Length: 140
Image (cartoon, rainbow, N blue to C red; front, side):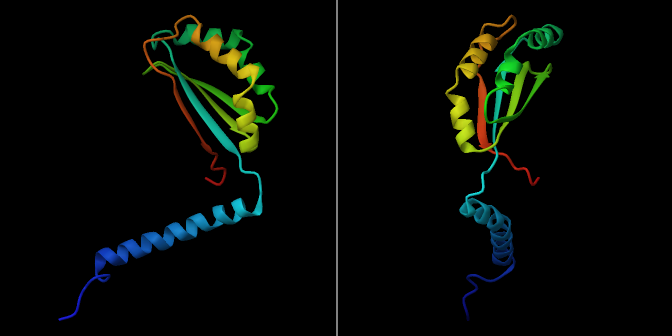
């Protein structure tokens, strides 16, 4: 006779997932509401010739670009990587908070770095730059 809406294994599973999400998100909401600064991240991949790892590595090491972006106010950390399998030069930034990241995005240092990368030997202008900005999950 009765309706089985909201009961059974599927609804129990969904209830468990909702409860777990709630517990996971609660600390983030509390920290956000408290006004505590939250570190931000920017990850950017620039396309390069994948067969030129030694040359790209030498170019990055010889350029002043890494030092200039690291010296900017609010930049907590910057790491550079090269993927020879697909041909990406990547930079992963961590900023103290959203205000620092937003301020950095308008700096001359970033514009100069973009120009240096896009005019570097072995830069592959046939592909698009990939960029991601978000919250740095320092608890993970």
